[in-house]
Image 1 (cartoon, rainbow, N blue to C red):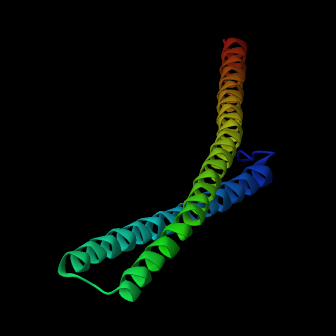
Image 2: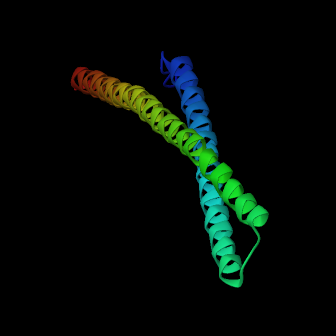
Length: 149
């Protein structure tokens, strides 16, 4: 009979949980990158609007345009804390998912080591049984040879 690990179903389930955790971590990383990109895009829009506002001020602009630029830049700047908070939440989620992934990897490695140790014990037991059969065969053959003499 071949080797059969008693906890193979548990090991397979842990592999599934590990893969699920890995996918969730990757999805969280994607959301974090998207949040970071939104923050960077907004910061770039603010810088561009400020540069355009300053350039138009140097060339002269009416009060209505001046106030429109000022309001626009202020509105953009108000969005920034919210986007940064979303980015921080996404980063926190990535870290939480990473920790879960590490825990699941460790749990799986424990079972894999147990399976390997059980397999080593099995192969050692098989080798002992083979040696025992060989020894018995030699003893029987020696006993028969001694009777024949």
